[in-house]
Amino acid sequence: MRLNKFLASAGIASRRKCDQLIGKGLIYVNGKVVTELGCTVNEKKDKVFYEGRQIILPSSFVYIKLNKPKGYACTAHDEKGRKTIYDLIKSEERLFSIGRLDYDTEGLIILTNDGDFANKVAHPKYAIEKEYHVTIVGEIKESELAVLRKGVVIDGERLPSAKVEFLSTDGKTTKLSVVIDEGMNRQVRRMFEAIGKDIKLLKRVRIGQVRLGGVKRGDYRDLTTDELNALVRAE
Ligand code: URA
Image (cartoon, rainbow, N blue to C red; front, side):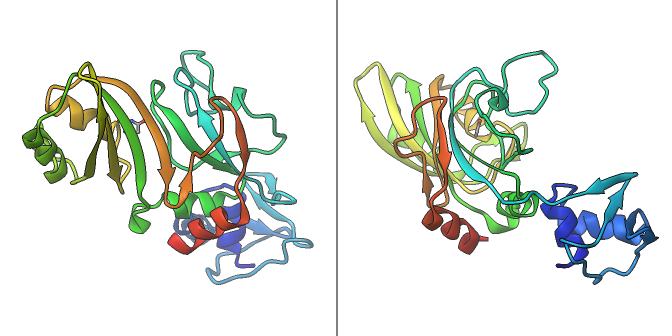
């Protein structure tokens, strides 16, 4: 396996950043500095060190989908001491989330100990679709939907366009489907702020072809082979 892939799979950084670490002479293989970029290692035999620590690949990769409830932070250690998604998962492995959801957003998060895969799926270049169900207070006009679809302008910056579909309304609240393929900070919330609509519930229901499906709030399960392969093909 190429050394940059080995390091990225262990979650050190993206392959490109790992190449920089190799180029800077910061990676040791079997006690010797390696600076050659295309270098390969035998992951079962070779001893790879970075910052004085041996880098070991997880024995088997884990890929799970979690239904994050509202009120959980997507970080390993929350500065404010709040509950995190890692409080919900019983795993000995160090898991990385592929993208994040706000503290107040619920729904689908994919986690894995395969850092290389996580970096690739999250990369904007692959533009993997994310679908949200958004419940807003009140109703929405066709003209407002058109603004959201075109891309709202906030502080002089135009947010990317989105696919927005009306789902239902009971007069008091309205449910919409919003599909984006970028992951800008608070993108969906900022879209609705821009048209003066309050969000009551924001839930991610799909990443690429992986759907939240029947996973209960706070629960998680392994991705199926089909789901995993669909993500790999989308890369
Ligand atoms: N957009 C948001 O505003 N928040 C999220 O958590 C995800 C997408």
